[in-house]
Length: 146
Image 1 (cartoon, one colour):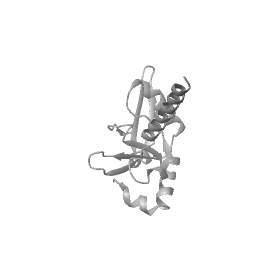
Image 2 (image 1 turned 90 degrees about the vertical axis):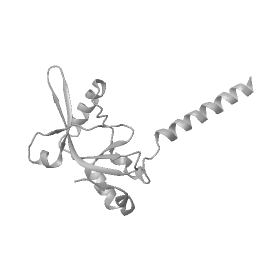
Image 3 (image 1 turned 135 degrees about the horizontal axis):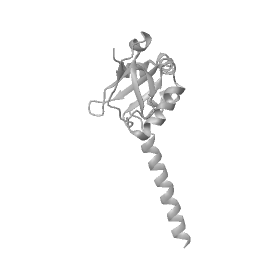
Image 4 (image 1 turned 180 degrees about the vertical axis):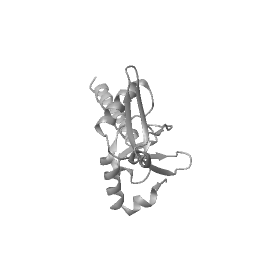
């Protein structure tokens, strides 16, 4: 009996540590340096995520965001600057991104991208820029798209 309890405990610990490693796996070397800037924004356009994204859009209103996208096949990492906008009607919620240039010019040009919670990350731009300024090795890995 004591042996089976010990074995069960051991298996539980191994299972938890395996899950933690998978969840915390970096997409690229040095990604952990950006953790403090990361925003959980599930921009998947699923009904369940719409409410979460709308709350985040309200919370981050007027703040520039970085959308970092990792290509799992080529291992290329690109990022672009956006603002998150959410509009509510009586029945629906519309969440979308607006390019920095359009947002600053007060143009309402919605961008709808294919978003993967597994390979794409949102960061607050001020924090992201600060981390890159202090980490030239990380800056060399990332490529900003214009």
